[in-house]
Image 1 (spheres, rainbow, N blue to C red):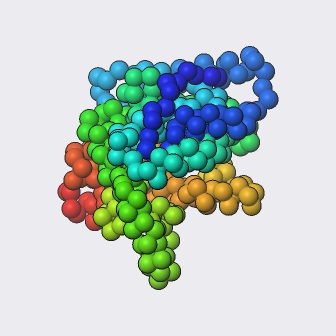
Image 2: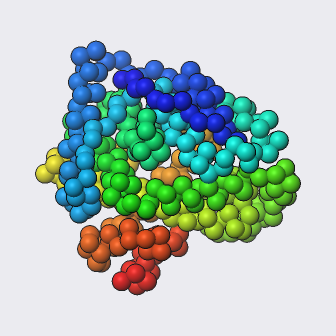
Length: 353
C-alpha cells in the first residue's frame, strides 16, 4: 500500500520535508487484514477509479475524450508524504522562497513539525483525495488511502466493493473538476497565492496581522454567523478575507458537487448507496471528546458543513436548471457561486441564468 512520492519543495512558510517525515513517523498503523485481503483491496481500488470516472462523466457531461488513468493506492505514511508534496508545490507557487521574511525562515522548521502532527492526525481519517498539484510530474494525482477505506467499511458494516466504488466516485469527481475545467487549477493556485502572500511578507506585515486579531475577535463575538472557519479567518486583512471567501465558496462547491454526484450515480451502480450514505453521515459526526476537539481545532467540522452546503447548492441548481445548466459554474471564475450564493442557490440561478 506504499507509493513513492517526490520530495516536497521548499517553502518560506513551512519546511515540507520536515512535515512529511514527522507525519509519516507519527502515522498510526492500519487495520489488521491478511496480505491476500490487502492486495485485493488495493487492486480493487485502483481498478474502480477507472470505472468510477466513467460513471461520473456520464452523469455530469464533463471530460469527454480525456484519458482515464487509474488512481494511486497508498498507506497512511504514503498519504502524508503525498499531501506534503502537493502542499509544498502549491505554497512554493504562491510564495517564492526569496519573499520569505527573516521571521518566517526561522519558524519554517517548527511549522513543519506542527504541520506533520496535523497530517498524521488527518492521515488516519482521509479516505482519498485528488491533489491537482501532486504526483511525480505535478500534473495532479488521485490517491486512495486503503487502510482508511477498509477501517471505515468495517466500522459501518457495509458491502466492501460498494463502499470502495462510492469513495472512488467522490474522488474521481474532484479529478474531473480539475482536468475538465482547464482554468480551475491555475485559478485556485492564484487565489491561494493572494491569500498566503499576506502571511509571508515582511516582519511588519506579520506584526500588522497580529494587531488585527483583537478587532476581528470582537467582530466574531458580535456576529451571529456560525460559518467562521477558525484562526486563519481571524488573522486576515479585509483584502485577504475577500480572497478567503472566494476560496471557501469554491471549496464548498467542489466538495458538495462531489458529494451530490457520488449519491446521484444511484443504486444501479452502488446498490447499497442509501445505507452507505446514512451510516457515513453518522460516522462523520462521531468520535470521542478528544477526537471532536481536534476536529474542531483543525476545521474538520467546518469541512463537514461544506459538504452539506455544497451538496444542497448542487441539488437545488440541478433541480432548477438541469445538469447542463449547473455546468455553467465551470464557464469562468465569474460564474462560480459566491459564499453568499452557496447558501442561496436561487440567487446564483438568477444571476447566471
